[in-house]
Length: 184
Ligand code: 4NP
Image (cartoon, rainbow, N blue to C red; front, top):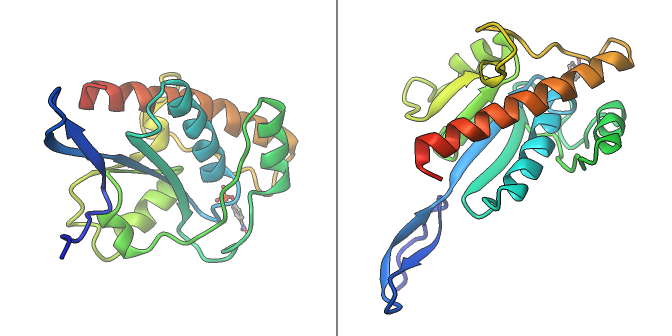
């Protein structure tokens, strides 16, 4: 019987004689906000495109989730989707809640603000997480350490543009960090 496939293994490496040499491990990234309809889907869409342009889509898998279940099953907020589309990003995520089993599925869990970071830190399994749990904006080179990605949900349209600016800077910083850390 075939051995169970580790979900983090996405293929095999072969030597020049075609012999299997090892396993190719995916690096998995999850962006987390409150509703998973504004900020984390925006970061998700931007990161997917950056990874695609870097030709790393086989190695870096991107997802997003919310700490709340209020919007589960919904697509991205139409205001987020509209500003993203103006800059060429398609936001295709469906809202889901971050669940404790996600600690085993991801290498990088990035909270969009400090409140969501605290909520994640309180979840079962957080203490045993061996990956990187961090504030997303710590990868934005223009932001002071510990900065939030502001929640645009109840504000005007400018807030959605600001979130997209932050996501573009933060995702580039995050990709640079991952490439350096993993030699990609
Ligand atoms: P997000 O934005 O966390 O960036 O998806 C929000 C979406 C919905 C709500 C708050 C923030 N809400 O209160 O319903």
